[in-house]
Length: 290
Image (cartoon, rainbow, N blue to C red; front, top):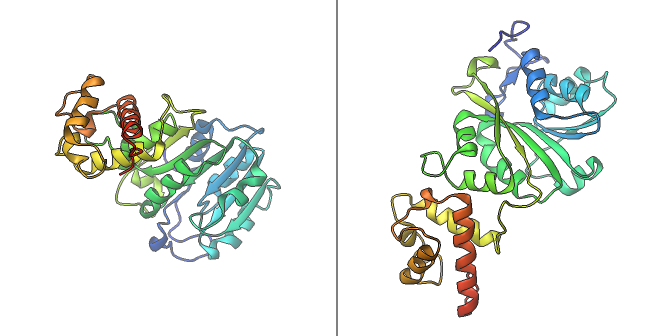
């Protein structure tokens, strides 16, 4: 990792201390920021929604690379800092607000189809924001997110590993995650307690295999991953109106052992299992709902 281009400040640009309660850890390494921007693949033909612009240094890189940037910042006191830092860029709009509570369809309407989302996500907001991005249904072409390294490992995890879980399944169902860069804690000001990683999540036009009921798929996966020490059949007791014997038959039809655990199922296996449970429920009049 290259050294920063200048000494990292001890306080924010407005002289105020960094707000740890808001997860403020800023990047001041312009070379690193330019590299991260390049890794997203954005061009002047693209529009970008940036979540958490902070000091605005990454925002400036995005303005130089993209055609249009919409930056949403939670901290109201940073808005004057951002306006000053980005005054030279006519292609940026700055909005103050909590991305979790704003109307995303209305907010993103001016960005058009196939826009990018770039986010340096505060660690304590990682799960809700990733969930929002993955399940929003908006015409996102790609999300590129800075997350703690542990979360990045989950996004990229393979079946049978300890990192593999519901987040892995959702990310790989909707996207094709890839690691862009590892970013050590020392690169941030102030340094967090853990290292981070920048992950690109290009959205699929369609799931790799069709799912008859996405809600059922993720409900089953949540139960299966939620009790990792149990076999999948035991973990799903009470979740589905299907008995253990019926679940074992379904697993056998998919060439999966009756004692398999949820963490061993690939995305394709999970979709096949969910579809079979859905079909079984339809035949019995239960609709596959738990």
